[in-house]
Amino acid sequence: MKHINTIVNNGMKKSGNIGCGECQSSCQSACKTSCTVGNQSCRHQDERINTTKKPLL
Amino acid sequence: MVHCFKYNHKGRDYHFLWDVESGSLHNVDKDAYLVAKNRYGVLDGVDLQDFSAMQDNLVAEIDKEFEELEHNGSLNVPAKIMATQKQIGEIKALCLHICHDCNLRCKYCFADEGTYHSKCKEYMSFEVGKKAIDFLIEKSGRRQNLEVDFFGGEPLMNLEVVKKIVEYAREQGKTYGKNFNFTLTTNCLLLNDETIDWLNKEMYNVVLSIDGREEVHDRLRKTANGKGSQALVLKAAKKFAEKREDKSYYVRGTFTAYNLDFVQDILYLRDQGFEQISIEPVVLPDDSPMAIKPEHLPQIAAEYERLAKEYLDSRANGKWFNFFHFMLDLEGGPCIKKRLTGCGAGCEYLAVTPYGDIYPCHQFAGETDYKLGNVLNDDFSLEISKKFATNIVTNKPQCQNCPAKYYCSGGCCANNIHFCGDISTPYSISCEMMKKRFELSLAISAIEATGTK
Ligand code: SF4
Ligand code: SF4
Ligand code: SF4
Image (cartoon, rainbow over all chains, first blue to last red; front, side):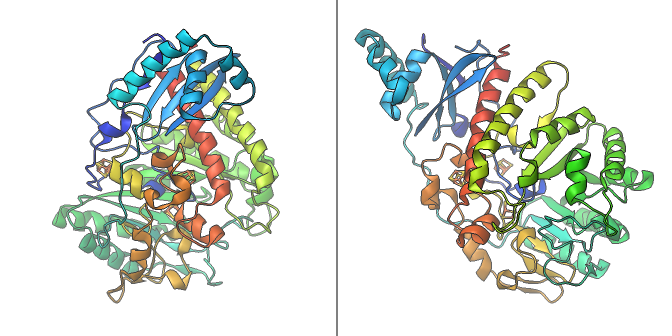
């Protein structure tokens, strides 16, 4: 594509809907006031989605 | 929903499209950015003028590329993820209030200097700790990985009980096939070599409380006799971080209305050699002079922007550090269920006080309306959990058009309840900060992933 460089393709699809509950609870990680899940990782993350390494447009 | 945003890196504007529902991040050229704003958002001001000047065939060419992405399911994907209720009754994490007492008198402490509204100092006994571990194992269902966080007050003031609980949990873990991950939050004053070695052996993560620059820290984190604590804390925290090697830790500070230039504190901590840094906005009612108020938000947003620039520069030039809220795992983040249900407070995550009382999370400790039971007498009711079970981002009207929807998960329910009176109404001050940090994190991810100089 000429005008678009995809950096992350379909991150949500990759994350599936396993919900095994084995990863760390977000409030246990550091902040204890307004914990969010965005910076948490899944325990089953071996299968990483493809990201481009092309320079930004 | 498509969120269109720009980020200026080293004098050049980069344009991005974030597709909320698919979790796709596209970097586009300026022409495509204008077409995207016309297609998916609102065109106004200079953007509208620039778009009007574009040639029709160029717009058509770009539209075609967008159609292809839409067809492939990575742009303008409609919201179809729906959930209304969390599972309750299975618990995987406990915050143990090991000690409602503290050797500091921090002026912004939400725990009332450790006492959590009770006005008396209490230490958890081993008996209560043991019952809490039994309770956790009993309620953990099929989950193998369980978490226990030692929190206070200052947990190191009751270290012997912490040690006994860890030993007991490890033993019980073997019997019941459970793996315990322990974490501990400390103000560092009681850290000595022996304690550091023990923590390094047993704790999966340790959070070291320090606010940053000496004058900032000492203004609010004073000892009982009114002296500043920064010099002592810094020395102990540095020693800890050095001995920690590659195990997980955070230095965690609080910023208030007194230090809205908090990026200086983050950079100060980086310059002291800390690599894992988290600085959080204070959570206080509006009538406190330290509280973050709506009028502070523009300055806070500008500070986060400044931090993003420093962060990229620093990491690219040999001074690597991590800022908790810029960490974004776009490729290996949590599953959809976790994104919908967030922190798990009141459901899979609970707090236990020194008396054994059970609360939805540490922020509710002492608020008896939210008490779920007590570990000492097997009294545990799911009535309160039911309220928290509907705390799902797709149930919150204000979150539906938010770019950070599946990363924030609808905000902190303690803040929502304490500031807005309702679990489903996000606390707008937190939202503004969250959205700003999220956008910057996306730009940082793109710049770092592509090696852009
Ligand atoms: S480990 Fe992964 S799949 Fe399991 S709950 Fe956590 S994020 Fe979801
Ligand atoms: S930032 Fe606010 S609006 Fe957005 S998901 Fe979080 S709580 Fe909801
Ligand atoms: S309610 Fe807030 S403080 Fe409590 S666990 Fe959830 S995010 Fe953390």
